[in-house]
Length: 52
Image 1 (tube, rainbow, N blue to C red):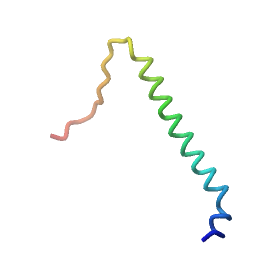
Image 2: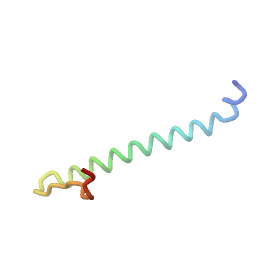
Image 3: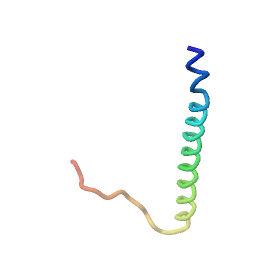
Image 4: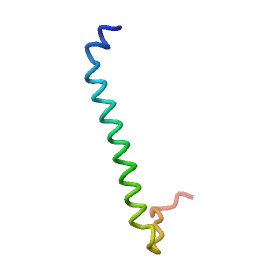
């Protein structure tokens, strides 16, 4: 088991780094969008066909 961890340790570190950066970027974009629409009178609602 340790041999496998040693072999793929850099790949796992890189994978978790990419996942972490994607989460930070997603939260940043959401925060930026919320700040842009903060002082406007727009109300954004999802549109689509109703199932019920």
